[in-house]
Length: 273
Image 1 (cartoon, rainbow, N blue to C red):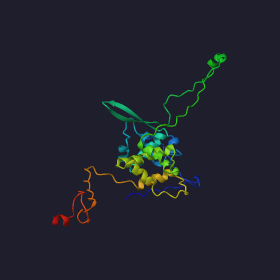
Image 2 (tube, rainbow, N blue to C red; image 1 turned 90 degrees about the horizontal axis):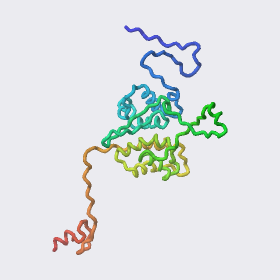
Image 3 (tube, rainbow, N blue to C red; image 1 turned 30 degrees about the horizontal axis):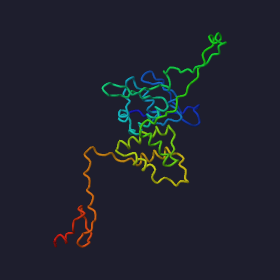
Image 4 (cartoon, rainbow, N blue to C red; image 1 turned 45 degrees about the vertical axis):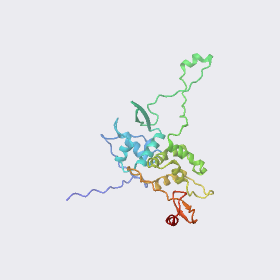
């Protein structure tokens, strides 16, 4: 008979509320992760988890969407959305590399901390002509240059989401939300839904015009998930159903009947002829 585990005893100096940490000093198989990622204020829980997982992997590990989807229980759309969050926050970068022969590959760069390992950018500081001697002994001023706002939308999915505000101004999305929701729209497009069908579905039966939509990103996220169409089979498309013949009037008796021949007569008139 196995011994029963000893129950944990709460120390007398433990905090009166909140989590109680039981610490362990690892000596092998551990990863150092910054709190800027582990406690990121705007990343989703899935994005933080994937960011920590990717930082724990060795150089050259496969971190494609397919591999991560097979590794975790989250679906492809959720994984794509989380990776896009990490790209937006600077933890990941995607680089398209030419392989030759018209082939390309996407390489993923993971930063332990956004911007680490990049050369520092310096702003040019004019030096007065009469201060040359003093400038030699003073350190050069360094000014951080903010990354420019993206000017081009990365693909048809992002463009579709950005243009929803032209249908209803309440569906105006910030840039980060457009990138976060773009993988979900890509999934619709992959299932042979046209952009017009997607826009029609997302904007149908909106709340009355006087009712505000406080969180358009969450509103659209729910519709993209709940109304996702099924994928089409890989087989040939079903045969087209022939439209019924139009109604025409018999020239002999003015009876209406269906025929593709506009000069045809009805069955009775043909039998009497």
